Amino acid sequence: MTIEKARLKQDADYILHELTRSICPECKTVIDAQIILRDNKVYMRKRCPDHGWFEGLVSSDAEMYIAGAKFNKPGTIPLDFSTEVRDGCPLDCGLCPEHKQHTCVALIEVNSACNLDCPICFADASPAFDLTLAEVEGMLDRLIELEGNPEVVQFSGGEPTIHPQILEMVAAAQARGIPNVMINTNGLRIAHDDDFVAELAKLKPAIYFQFDGFDRETNDRIRGADLLKTKLKALDRLAEIDLDVALVAAIERDVKMHEIGALVDFGIQHPAVRGVVFQPVTHVGRHIPFDPMLRVTIPDVLHGIVDQSKAELVLDDFVPVPCCFPPARSTRTSTSTARRSSRYRASSRSMSTWTTSPIAPRPTCPARTRSG
Image (cartoon, rainbow, N blue to C red; front, side):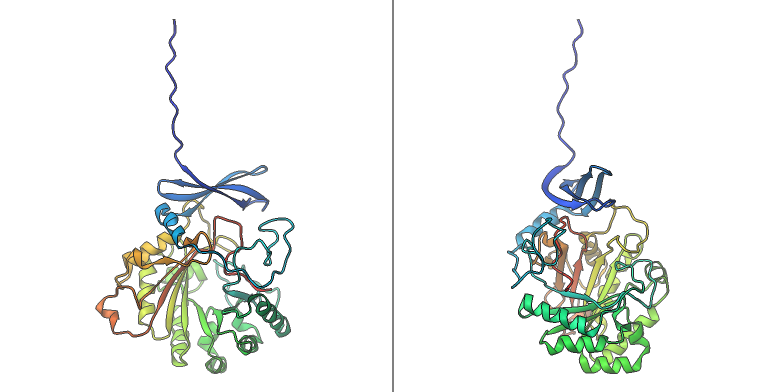
């Protein structure tokens, strides 16, 4: 007589946190997706009927990810919508009536050309189009129809400063009463064009300034050239004309994680800088090879700030921005309220540190929505 050993049920090695919708990274078909928790990390797991299973890291800290939900708030609905609900999210975007948030930051891409050829470029910039001033004015008017009193417009590209009418576009936004008008730039023209800097001094836009770090290797791998001297020259020129600057650093694993603290400390010290924005690289457009299971997420950046910076920041100083869910996509702190070492307390100005992630677990449009 043979007695078989009883089989024992086993628990899965993950917790199913929620269900959502995503797209297949190969064919872009909308498919179901699972958000799972495993080893204190958050992953998206999804299956395409034609291309099989995919899995990618959403957050390197599940506790931080879940705790961020307490900061969530109801979305603010725009005054009007631009598309109908027909095929479902994310195919109806524009904004459609199912969109869960108004346009917090209207980003207008005025061109596709650039004066750099960076190995990492979300926009995959290359010569293709230039918006006319009339087209931009139409977008601004439509934004006002949708928002009533829009707070922020950011002009981007490509490289917007090489657009021949960028100054007129900034003036058009300001003439419509938009209080915060920004130019997203790599700073090259600012470093070298005296007349352009003189016009910026008159208009006083905020500058969203690409600044990736101090090491030659960092600049070579992310921008394809050692641009540090040019960037520092541009920043000093912006300080001379009293323009507010947010440093924007693209963060890629094994490239510049070691410079996160130095960027914060530099921002606190430089007279032009009012904020530092860290953006974990979105692997679309041009990018270096990567493993989706090892991508940089917001907790990685926050730990880098706390561990490396001399500003005596702690993780509790950072809170999610409660304008979209999951709110952990965007977190911020301010050195005007956070603990700081005596080295920095003499400064009376406020500087914010923002961390944003361009990849969300849902296919819904991010709160930072393009206009048009």
